[in-house]
Length: 351
Ligand SMILES: Nc1ncnc2c1ncn2[C@@H]1O[C@H](COP(=O)(O)OS(=O)(=O)O)[C@@H](OP(=O)(O)O)[C@H]1O
Image (cartoon, rainbow, N blue to C red; front, side, top):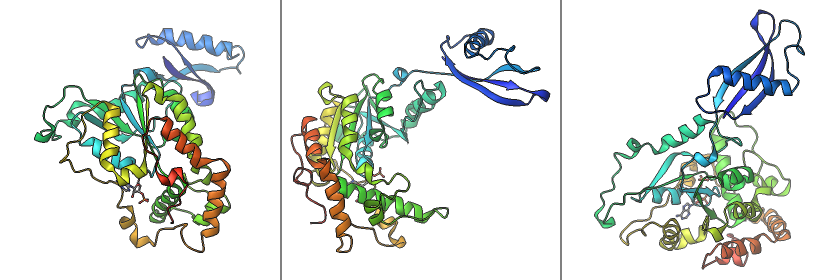
């Protein structure tokens, strides 16, 4: 397939208008003339004929770019969300697993209905063999080194995008791992990271207070109180990657935090790879933000007396959509043998 633009050139050959942007199917090695004929026909159907255009106009096909299919993407698993829920820790430890290769790039999959071939190629370059040549997989405690490596990646925004979820579900055999954190604590963590990132950036404008984010619906970057309704996003995840088909694993942040070995046993079983050996040190990643941003002031927290009204308002807001009960049900239905008290009993991290 190809994506092309039809433009009109005016006097002196300047492009006057881009008349249409269209996609059509043709063999990848289709000669230019044939492609031009196809495009001229498509343009004519839209009323774009030479006769219909002002004198001296020309129709020109430019920027023809070959398309690919989502089905052409090879990816075994994606850590698809949610941000601030331990996704770095899952990625970092799986990266040290000899049966797994993990893409260096963040995999946002922010592609169109048909991805460009160049997008698929650039994505696949994450898995070029030489990328891993120097990796050390000779740890004796792992025993046998496997032949087949699973290809994985992290794209923590994917779980929040029904469009990308729908398209990515076409990737053959793709399975998702989604980390779930109690929504109040999650919003607080996201707010703090984005605020610190913003403070570090000189072009950053006014940053609303956490109180205003909660009480007045103020938002900046990707911080929006509406997104704290994680269960609604998860409904979409489940619809496109049904756990009953083995396509989705939901892992609670609390499990990762309090019983990391169990969390990784579940992840390895889901992926069908060997469990981490007992002497493997499960590491924490992205937990150092607090230290990194220490010089920019204290973290905002909803747990102070002054912010108690905001905390209660957020809890009420979430209660109205039955957020915690829905999360607990989704986690249990996705096969988790354990749901934390934090989510099951709607316990605030402040207590
Ligand atoms: N193993 C473990 N134990 C306890 N806490 C952990 C762990 N791994 C990550 N974290 C906390 O998770 C937050 C970072 O999550 P992510 O890696 O998903 O963040 S990111 O969106 O990809 O930047 C960040 O949360 P906050 O510190 O509350 O902001 C990390 O401290």
